[in-house]
Image (cartoon, rainbow, N blue to C red; front, side, top):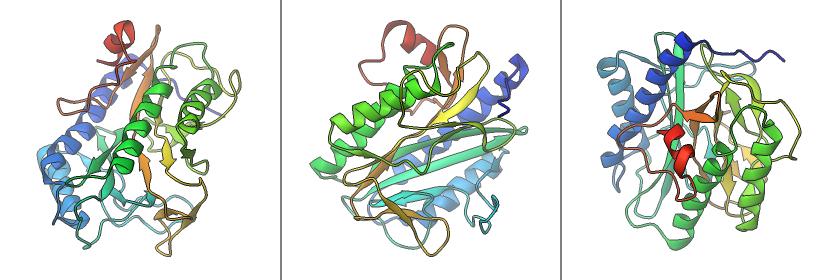
Length: 274
């Protein structure tokens, strides 16, 4: 396994790409309401990335081995869709939940982030799922510092999530990121403490737990991309891109409209995340 360690110059460029990705979500936020289609959200995002940010939407035509090229500029996963949902002309309705996943390429570097949105007035169960998933992501982020192992991150996310009565999707994980969309290491959202690779300063990767309200089993839809829960239970996901610093972590994918970190992120950790 070859994990690329980013230089100071790389990190500066990744900060920009990460902030831009988050700013796309800021721009989309007021548009996510009953009556809009995910296709319309995709066009808004595409035009903003290309014309305003002078950047490239990384998902568009992305084709890892065995996949057909992804046809849109963002991923929109609604209700029981877990990830990689393709924007379409179906209208979002009151009570839906939707994950919007944005990756931009700016000056050759990737910024990758996603947020959950509740369309209109969401039900109590949907709101709780989105909230717990957000906290689960931050439970993982809070573990990041030199000397920690990837298994420690996965264990923190898994135990918190399962203690809340939810399940973690295991087939998809976080990933290293930089000049490539997906690099080593794989960042599992479950695991055992003290296992897997040790974190060192300059590593950059995503933490992006997918949490199901029901069972963890998933299946792929006929489009070759969209992943759904097998039992059709709701699924939620949040994602940040994180740098391992000398003393802890820095979150690259924060912007003016980012939701604030949970209350348990405080003191030095909050400063590191700012």
